[in-house]
Amino acid sequence: MNGCIITDTPIAVDFWRLTTDSPYYVHFLSHMHSDHTRGLSSAWRRPLYCSEVTSRLLKAKFHVKESLIHTLPIGQAIVIPLAHDNEETMTVTLIDANHCPGAVMFLFEGYFGKILYTGDFKYSPSMLSEGGLQNCQNIDVLYLDNTFNSEGCVWPAEHEAAEMIEGVISSSISDTNFLIALHNLGKEELLVRIALKFQRWIVVSPARYETLKLLEMPNVFTTDPEASNISVINQSEVTWKNLIKWNSGGVKTIVIVPSALYKLSKVKTAYNHPNVVLVPYSSHSSYTELVTFVSNLCPKRIVPIVNEGGSSSDVSSFDCFLSKREQLHYKIPECVKTYQRAGIFPRKEMRKVNLQTKARTAKRKVPSGVVYEDLAEVSSKDCARTTDIAIEGNVSPPETERNVNLISVTPEQPRKYKGMGLVTVHRDECSPRDSQEGDYVSTLSAEQKGHLVKNDVLSACNQQEIVFCQNYDSKPLSGTSRHQCRKLKLQYKTPNMKIISIPVKHQISFYQVFENIMAKIRDEHAEK
Image (cartoon, rainbow, N blue to C red; front, side, top):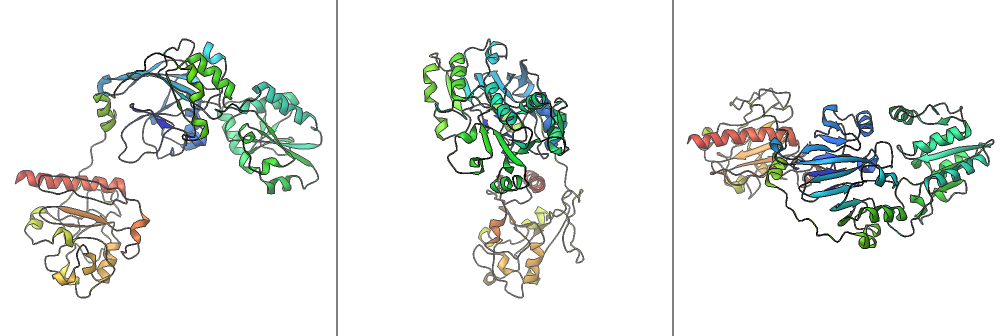
């Protein structure tokens, strides 16, 4: 994945790998290629900033909530808050990246100085003269697209590569089918040029046709496969099997791949087929274009974006173009740290959960809500030691059913916590011989184990601490089943309690239940 969090800032560009514990970042999306959107889906719940074209594609493809998408104009500096009450702000300017529809570079300015994040970009001289960088001096850090950071990566100009493709098509336009292999987004201007040059429709898939309509491209595309002998396919479709099939019908088929990436590959693939034509038509900057770009900007420092640790990540060849001015040294302000911990957008208050004790009925096989016993009742009993409480066990000694009390409580919002049954187990009557150290479930009968497995959480508590443990799947509890779910360990301390560790399967709803339980316990301690 091509994306990163900019050091000592709350800025995240093309970075979507977050957990429930991740601090708040200001998220930016450079463009809609799949290697820059991994982790982004309709489930995304944080604000993000992007260009107007990317915004349209984002809503259509990923169905991200419109209220979370903030569209920014190109070439205009926009102020964005980094802390509460605008105590700290930054400005961001979007610059056309000339890579694919909607692709932009980001120029950030704030307490960290000036940071230019290119994302994927194709250098054009107009970027330095009229594209927003004409007056950009003293760049502190340049995050550079280093895809072709190698002296051997020198390609012809775009118009020259386009003329090469036109030459291939014109040589046998009347008796050959042409398939142009592209990614889902990008090089639309090349397709329009070919359509106008040969006065033919370009056949595309229905999905690509919908994308082209969103991009408001000229009316040169169709989904009718009989309308033209020039079609667009996805690059993943270029296989030996398909090449044999395409050329077995009596009509020759030539596949044109307008990409410079495959020129670097030494692996024998379908692209080595005699009917496949590779043309170095690239939407990334070549090495000579990178040199021109960096030598004009003269940044103080360069950070490579792509393939960190790979050979192209060595940007030492650009050292001679770096500015000799002293680098800016800064620390992230405390108000920004506070923002990252809490977020500019305050979290909603959790709904109160009714924790009133209610006797469990025999008819209900699976409790539909939170189960919790009053702290005063618990403290009046002789509970087991911490070492006697665990959830793993492979044996089920008989005649222990009478020693276990199961109590359940239904919350105010049963649907919200459906499947989040919580069970309180007491050991006050169990004999020591029934339990091994760290193994409490082994004292339960098979029937009781079956009951606990149907619940999401098993808990046990005493006067000094409360330990929450969760079962892992619908199978009997065993040492192997713990590896079948992901865990989120939460830690909580109160004056009279030790650290509490909880493996959580249903992270969001269980976290809310846990917070309410902890609040009740703290209130009880405060009253005492």
